[in-house]
Amino acid sequence: MVGRLQRSDSDLQLGALLLSIHQ
Image (cartoon, rainbow, N blue to C red; front, side):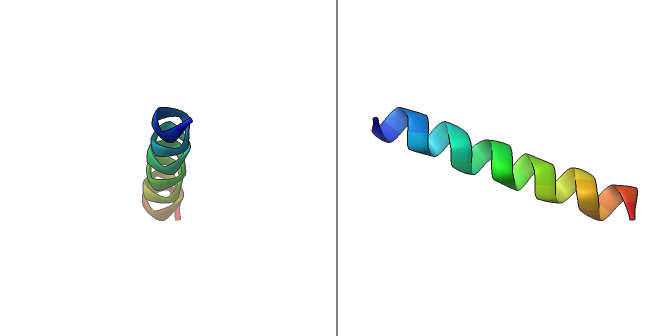
């Protein structure tokens, strides 16, 4: 469960980074 949560957090961070670059 913890690993899955970490994975989601990583995906969120990656998404935010992509959004930041896209803007």
